Image 1 (spheres, rainbow, N blue to C red):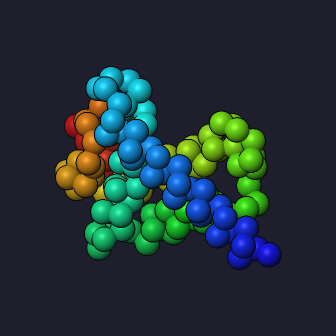
Image 2: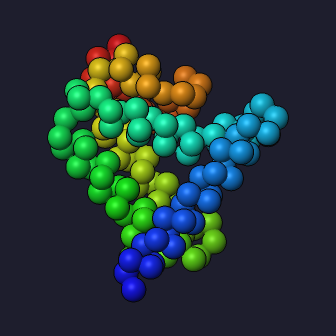
Image 3: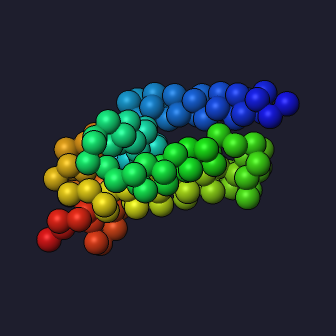
Length: 133
């Protein structure tokens, strides 16, 4: 039963991510496009950071825990509740990415980020990476 629920959760995440990736390409430039592109950009950043050997083990564990939370059928706010159900997933992934990015040199994070610099600044916050100015 847990395997089926986990697979269904993963399928929903992949479907929504795919729709967001398509929306990021077809929407006109502006705030809406930035918001829709944020999640696909985070996924690309996750993939690229995971490939780096400089990422500390504790950051890898936090990113893995965030991924497990997103695909888990047991969550603080269930995903079947529209909008609010996905908001907790977004918060967990954003906090995990922020934590992992702050443990790396800023240049590495900037090189791995596929989106615009404004989105990256929002993700990292004021402190930025390990070598922020």
